[in-house]
Length: 336
Image (cartoon, rainbow, N blue to C red):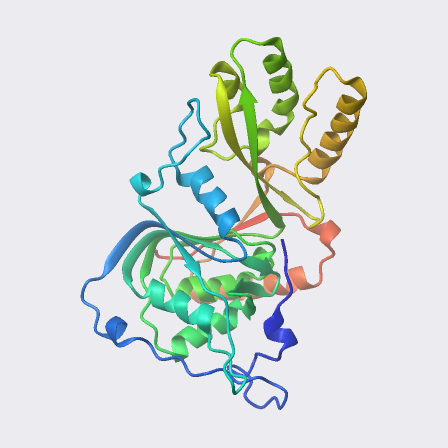
């Protein structure tokens, strides 16, 4: 869900706007000598980057989209290593005695990325806003993040497939997304214009019971929300055991609440009626990702793409949330 941008609240725009008297200065960034002289460059198939605030959601996303789900008796475990998925958790920001922000999260983001020569798919799981992303508990406008990386002359890898922003509302700033993706020479960048949510649900199925079948019927209202690598409710019912099911969805609201769980006793008519009401209310406010309308953004040249992205950013700034037409943006860069 969206979170506040303490960078703006604390005036942490000094790195861009040095004339502001109330701005908090940013300690200078120095790339480690090991990175400057690096010869043992790494490659990654899928690199997931997150921070302490969203590491649990990032884990769910990685396992639900890239893991190998074991549909057996035990709680589902995903073998991410076998699928060449790496996850990096960024530290939170800190200030020193002079009140300077150490750029702990942003510096670590750059340092970790500078270890790679190529990344096939870069997934960024951070809190977001229509203004940018929150890295290590401090909010950054994506355009400023991009310009700062250029000023610091950070050597960043090439992303060969795409960059995915698994962050709320970031898609409402296509201009910032374009500038960030250009740093990596990425051919495609995707982002959500809505709030995004991920959930896990643990269910226990016993062999051949009528209660199992009834429970699965009730659970199937959530079937569209299952992540690609999660087992389905029907598969869970066929094999006795405990399953961790991974779900996700998007909403115009950030207060949809937790996933309503059915009562333990399915024969309790009052409890069932209460749950069915809560379930129907939840599914009306939360949409599965499979229903998302994707707006493609393309152009014949990078300059034209920048102009279109800038116009879209202005468009979203003047839009009421009830008028959002597209839940997701897919930006394709020309000639890549």
